[in-house]
Length: 419
Image (cartoon, rainbow, N blue to C red; front, side, top):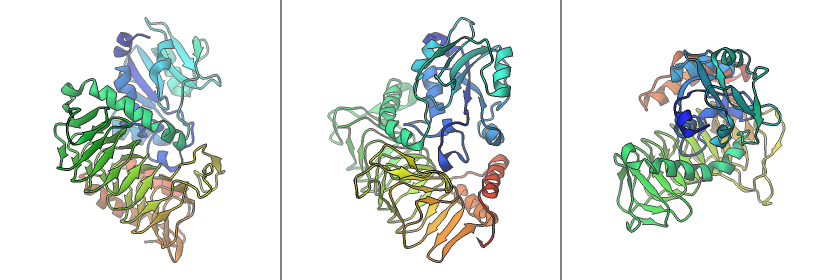
């Protein structure tokens, strides 16, 4: 498939419901994870130069996705042909095997998992309805990488940040960016530094590009004496506090508040880690707040492979990583001085306020104090959530609220709920 053909093709992005992401995908499809300087769906749209015209997602997420995107979801939009792309795909190289010029065809993994397909409307309806590639469509087999776990995301985060920043740099002027000159006294290293013209950079900021490029998005604020080490990406409207250290392989989305020491970490957006403390080799959802002095461990004392359990009743899995910090779902709050052990997973909506580390896998909507564990009452949780989102001038929509209620309902009962 040529680049010119890709530009003309309407795209349906598919969350096939496969992979295991724990609480990170309670309130979003897998393609909305921040896998670099951008989310996967943003990268697919930018690299393929196609127009995303719809989505196919698990039924429980359909209303949520439709509300957020305002695009047809789990139904086919108008059109004669569509490029279906798996939203866990991290490289578009496999799309070159999808036929052009009107011929139907698909690329699949050896186990039959769909990577991408170009289908005419009649066949596309069958795929949209069943989630399976219809019989008779010519296929090519590829082992293109499909994201399956949070630790795989961390494995690929640095190279993807680098590729994303370099792609943005190729259109720097038209996108409103300036390139920091190589001899600028604020920088060291030879890689690219992209700063949006609406961003604010205070005096005595250091950009260390020894290991990779740096991206600072629109209306971001980098306060005095902060040190940014590439590859890293600071999202739109984010503030990096005074004397912060942002280490390599770190990316955050919009409207975050960052401080202390952060490295090897993906933050989807709208989250606060403002104060001193360490956060390393971790993935955070949206609306997370880590209190002052919160620290996480990302290395076992044995220097061994970190095991991790994504679900409270799930199996412990091998991560293949020596460095692995925390996986933190949306709307999690940690009180001051919280300590998180290596490989900790915290479920959506949990509140941690104990003087000892929480369990390695925290249930969704758990309310943990020195008095024990209770459950965050839904009404109180929604009241707090609305107050937090209002601080960013946002309001949860009906579908978002319905999914919050569904996650709360299916994750336990309200006996002994904290209100």
